[in-house]
Length: 69
Image 1 (spheres, one colour):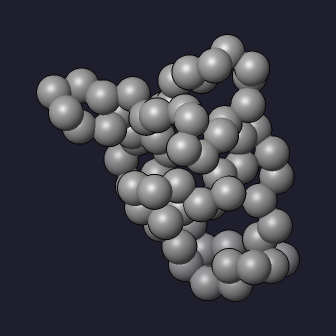
Image 2: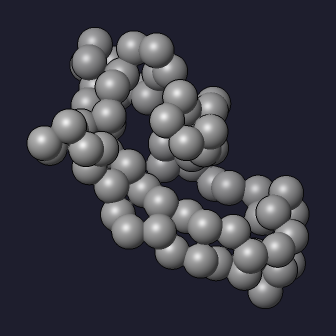
């Protein structure tokens, strides 16, 4: 699922297939609230947590996925 903020990929605790990346990519983890308490991240339902109107997220980290193939 793509999120509407950064066109990112939602893994929601799942596995990312590294073959799809094959180069260095930037990873940033954002925190979302489970609006309807179903324990699933759902686009258009669950919103990111905000502090001072900014999304709560980790700093961007660069990962070279070709090292994992």
